[in-house]
Image (cartoon, rainbow, N blue to C red; front, top):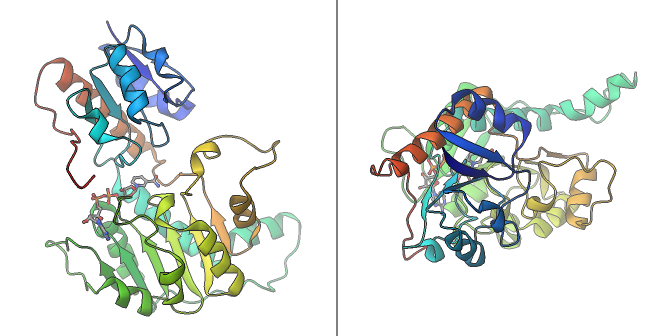
Length: 329
Ligand code: NAI
C-alpha cells in the first residue's frame, strides 16, 4: 500500500480520512512539516499538510531527497508553500473549496458575537452577573459592510449580510460576474464601511492590506473581521487603532504569527507573543483559532478531495487541483 505522511494531525482530521480511505497507508504525525521534520517522510510517496506547515525551499529539497512526488494541502490557501522552489520538483495540490458556507457563517457568527457582546455575556451570566452595563450593540440592519474579496467565501458572506438588511460594498480586482454586488475602490470601501470583512487570499498584493495608513482612512469605530489569513492585517497597527478607538472592535479567526500558537492547548503556558497577549485581553476583540472551516461538511469534503487529489497523481491522471508557480507568486 502507498504510504502517505500526514502532518499536523488533529483528532478531527482523522475522522473522515479513516472513514473514506481505502487505498493508502496513512502515517499520522502530530508534527508540522518543516525542514527538520521532513525526514519523517522516508519510505512514503506523498505528504499531506495543512495551513501552518512550512513548505519552503529547504523543506522541499528534503522531500525530494525522500522521493516525495506530491504534496497535498488539506486547505485552499497555499501561501505557506514556496511554489517557485517546488516547480519541476514536486507536485502541489490543494482543496480549492470545501465549504465556503462554513467560513462565511463563522465570519457572521464572529460579527454578531462581537457586536452583541455574546462572548462577554456568556462569561458574566455564568458568574451570576446579570448586569447589562457595557453590552450595548447596534442594529446590523441598514449598516454598511465592506467585503474585501468576493470569491467563493466572500460571495456567500455577501448574501448572508444582505439577508440581514445590510448595505454591502465590495472590492475585488476580479469582480464576480454571477452576482449583483456593488463594487467600489478600496479607498471608498475603507472610507464608507461601518464594518469590514476580509475574504481575499494572502499574496504580495494583499499583505498588510489593513495597515496603519489604511486604518487612518476608516470610519471611527469601524469593526474588522478577519477569517482569511493573519498577515492581511498589520497586527501592531491594529492594536494601536483599538487602543485609540479608531477600530471599535475586531474579530480574528487568523493571526499573523498564529503558527506557534493556534490549534494547541497552551492554557498552562505564558504566551511569548506580546501582540497576541494584548489582543486576547481586550474586551472588544474576539479571537478564534483558525476555526472557521471546522464543520462536519468541510472536514468530509477536505478528506474526499485530498484522497481524490492523491488518486489522480498515483493513477497518472490530470491533477484537477494542482497549484503552479506563476511569475507573480
Ligand atoms: P477564492 O479564490 O474563491 O476567492 C478569493 C477572492 O479574492 C477572488 O475573487 C480574488 O479575485 C480576490 N482577490 C485577490 N486579490 C485580491 C485583492 N488584492 N483585493 C481584494 N480581493 C482580492 O477563495 P475563497 O475560497 O473565497 O477563500 C478566501 C480565503 O479565505 C482563502 O484565500 C483563505 O486564505 C481563507 N480561508 C480561511 C479559512 C479559515 O478556516 N479561516 C478556510 C478557508 C479559506
